[in-house]
Image 1: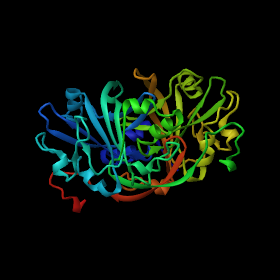
Image 2: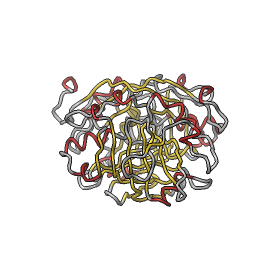
Image 3: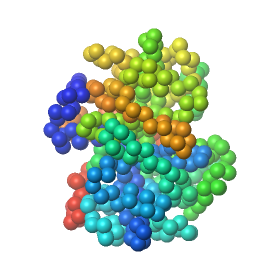
Length: 210
Length: 210
């Protein structure tokens, strides 16, 4: 076993530490967040930190790095009050990765990365046409994490769009059916293969029965 | 396409909504959080919301449901100041799922679910012996999410333990090498298969070269 203390982690070579520390938390969700500025210019950025916050009412959150450099996604969400969260499929994961390049503010990553800027009904922010799970949200709140000035942004789900045939009669959604991928660290992409599906666990459940 | 509005989501049948809304955010990390109360009784609970907060200094976070019922993990972290985050492998994913049953406070899920309670060096909280990524943390801060009273708990990494041979010379860690799994919603488990590994994206990168 390799045991690192807190101080040994602090003393690791910078890129070794970034790689390792971003990967130890396991598989991460993979999303493109769409926004527009007040002039209507669209923006698209990859995030690996979208998390479930609540089902009733429905909320999602994501983590933003500190605002020490320009954060177009954050600025646009604060300016318009709306954003979209679009699942990354295997088909578009390379294009999605490319959105992380530092494109100038006046360039839309939809166009630069060859992803479809799709408007659905009257939702004011574009969705990614290739995504099979498209979620339109309104800004709900932000929470500053004092430890390192990252921000947890919370959005309320205003609209949810997905293919008709992928949702089971009990609300189940198999990520394989929507070609969903996950991210390891900042740069590794993973396919997901379902290995088990278990009932709500109860104290007297035997593991074999699950 | 199936389009749900916010109000239509609110009006879905309860368990359908819970299933669907927990699954639309994609693949989630899969961890067991270990704690002890002040009498030394150990506790182990499954979480699907562990997220990377920072690498320097190293922080992880996780989401706790509202404190409207007993939350042993939260109470123990607040009482002792320490906890462990242990990656769930394919080998133990059924046992890990079983920890979600409502065991009484005086029962340790380590014993009830047949998982190894391992103490490493002088860290005061047990790790899961079967996990290949074991992380010991101190409580750093908590952030109440006002929208629905969930809590983002942040821990500082005090010690990180993993097999010697899984970390690359650049800090890379392939989740396949540690048999890591992910969770869909609350009850579906997924294996991860790496499909690509790309360089830091730059504006002039061609997608084909990534």
